Length: 297
Ligand code: GUN
Image (tube, rainbow, N blue to C red; front, side):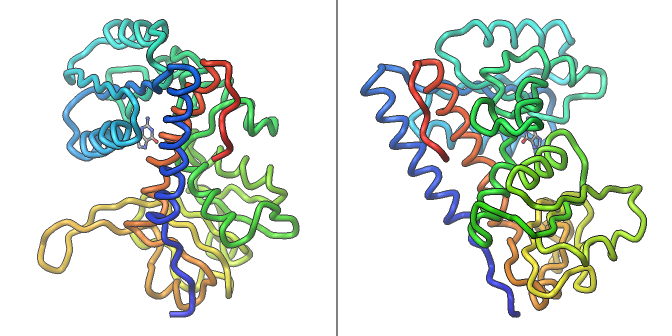
């Protein structure tokens, strides 16, 4: 193996230390305690595991942490009423509705009904629009791309001028905001997706390759430029050799690590950063609510 493995857990730990000290400082100066409300609908075990981790981390950061678990058969009106209640609650600074929602619910309508100032997922059109227009400080940025970008800065610094970046995936939650962040940092960006032709050839041009496809091990060594930075956003559960499920990314780690310069592992790469950036977004929203300038995370 030649690549340096990026330790996302360690980087996330430093972000969380900053979040904790910012939280203590806000409480001291303004008597404001960041409040995060996480809403989950239905029984999907993986989603419940993620949401549980978010709620626990919020507590560890010193936040007020509220979790709303709604039954699978909840109606659009019930969910809308909960969001409205949280929108007007002065003690709540961040609202996250875990996705995907059950099929009978209109997720986009729910997301857009969240007050933009409290949209710690960065999915409201106001926040997505600020990012798209290059305003990286005024809104809230989707947590996984923000976390991935923090890891990219470790290997390349703040300015990606002259570097080519390829993002595989074009979702609103990840691919689009990831591409916008890379572009804002002066990279030359290609957003590839399931309809892209010659995907391997496109990826081989990348100095920075970001994979978010949801397909275990799809990125192979011959897709990777020598010395490239690989950011693996995939979280796939596959049966391990003893039959118990194990987590793997979208990148064939061992073989790609022999070609890449830097690579993120799964687990322990982007995953811990997502949750750390969610905490950072929540404390940022609380600072703004209190009329204070938030720290840069
Ligand atoms: N489901 C998977 N990732 C996420 C996320 O970052 N935010 C929300 N709301 N749902 C998700």
